[in-house]
Image 1 (cartoon, rainbow, N blue to C red):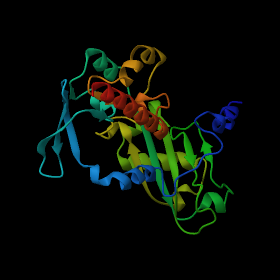
Image 2: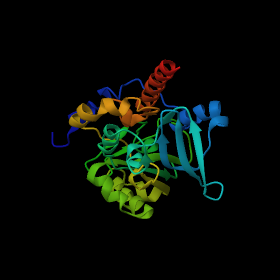
Image 3: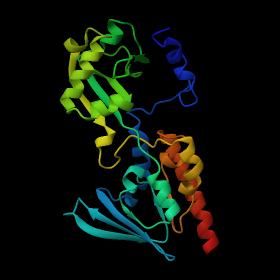
Image 4: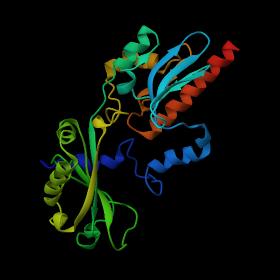
Length: 275
C-alpha cells in the first residue's frame, strides 16, 4: 500500500492514457514533420517574433530573421493565427484587448525534464524480461519508460531515464546536463543494478530553460478557466490564438490540433462575416 501500487496500476485507464494507443514510427516529432512535408513552402524558420500589432484592416508581425544576420522584418496579413506559448507571448508587444492580455498573463507553465539514455544492450529485456511499459519510482526521476519497438534486437538501445514535473523538475532544470544524467544514473541503479555498467550516452531536456517555450505546457486552474478561457479562445479583432493552452486537452498534441481546428473555424466565420 505504501508503494502507491494501485494508483499506478490504474495509470493506463485514464482518459488520456487509454490502452489502445499507437506511436508514430521514429518518434512523436514525426507528426510535426508530416505536416511540414505538406506545407514546407509556406514555412519560414528561425524567426523570433517581437511584436504583433493589429487594426481594423490587418495584422503586422515584427520579427528578427536570425538566419539572415538578425535582420528585422515584418509580415502583414488580413488575419493572424498565433501559436506562440503564453509563457512567451505574455512578454511580447501584443496589441490586443485588455481582457485578452489578462487571459494571456493568467496561465503559468509547468516545468518538466526528460532524459533519454542510451545503453550498450537491452538489458531490461535480456536480464529482467521487461518488454515495453514503465517502471514507476518515488525517486525524483519519477519513471523509467522502456521502448516498445525493436524488441529482441541486439546492440544499443535508448530508454526514457526520467520524466518529471513539479519540484523535482525545477531541481533538475538547475543542474548542468551532465549532472542530470549522473543523478538519473544514481536513481536508476536502485531499479536496475546494470545501469552504470551498460550506460553509453545520454541527453536531457528542461523545457523551462528553452527560450521558445519557457516551460512544458500550460497549467490552467478551474478558476482561471472560468475567468479567462472563453476570452483566450475568442477571435480578438483580427487575431486568434491556438495551441494546447487553448484547449481542454492540455500538454498534448491532440489538444493543440483540436485548438487549431477550432481557431481556423472561428476565423473563417469571422472573415466571411466581414466580407
